[in-house]
Image 1 (tube, rainbow, N blue to C red):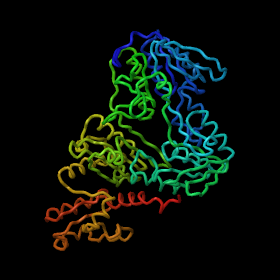
Image 2 (image 1 turned 120 degrees about the vertical axis):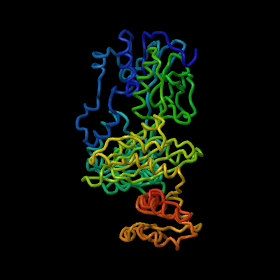
Image 3 (image 1 turned 90 degrees about the horizontal axis):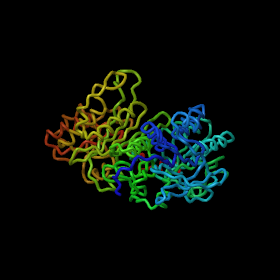
Length: 555
């Protein structure tokens, strides 16, 4: 049989893993088929719990623990007639016999559970790096972990969080909310690897403002009861440590069963989530996802839930299929939201892709309406096809709306230039008549039609190569901070200096790039070779701060 053959009316379906994808598959199966026997095997103490909410219960934002438990086994049995086996571990898949070997973790008893169809949704396990004493550190992955962290936090005044990803940021913020002095340690030179370095820098600035100590490019070499030791020999004293440096998919069962594995280290599945065994499906963290240029692991809850439903449909014979995953995600951190979709500039460079990069700094709604706040947006475009390759947005308000519009455009095949024609809702308190999304489209069209731009990290080399850097902001703006080596010629005075600039290569810069666009248009029409600094002085500030973190952050 091939991966695309349909199974024949399964009478018994076993699901390994009772969170996100597993429970989505279980409940969808029951809604489709009232007669099938459905068994969920979960090695933890709960199913159908909101693991994304764990840090917020630690910080007291979500007050009641029970709010995190969406369904318990008794409710699932009563409403869906689903049998849930908690604290039961699947130890092996016997493909020939179509059975799963399980062990009751409380009694130690072992047994076999037969299946007609099997869904693998075992999720991931937090990664504990090979650091001395790492076994003494906390992790935050399930309700048991959360209870342990809260118990320790209730008796502590200081903590170290190792890892600057989703969980690390959310937990560090919530420990600060509890009044615990907290240090966040990240081995990379930036927070949030889903962002490019210049887009991630505002997270560090916000953390400092809120009293969170951030250490970038810092390696933890040992963990003790009194804190951590870093690679440079320095120590950070703390009552407890939480390690949040990522997770590894629980692929042991799949590997042991001889299922086909992909290059990214996950289970290979077809467009119906079926594995190389026609009776086994895989969803969630263990299953590789369809990406714009291949397959990879994308451990996101939304995809897990969607693919759990898809697997259920496939098991019951429906002709549904998975679509491209863009990895759209967002994190909240001390009031700032940071979101991304698609690939980063860093990843695309590693892939050898050509790209057109656009930075903008729009406000989230009409500037004349009270309460407007500034965002930073980054759009990455294929210069040959105008396809959107990725986007990043960071700011206090309006971030989720903009990243979701771009993600939807990518899924629909709308090009970067096509963003300018999207008809988006407008009222002064929600947006501008020219929405930030539309503005990205306008800027992209200008670039596609030949307007030259330079990136923040290219300025030094171009100036060294003879380009002249002209700042067209006001005198007051320039006095409050400027790119070293820049010359002030305000936009309103620029036409008076055309003769002085003739025959030279000019980079124009302003605050965010908009006045630079006007300046570049003036000079270009006068026959002067000119480029606009993409995203202006604000992007240059973000990028240069991120590029030299050791000067700004203790390591």
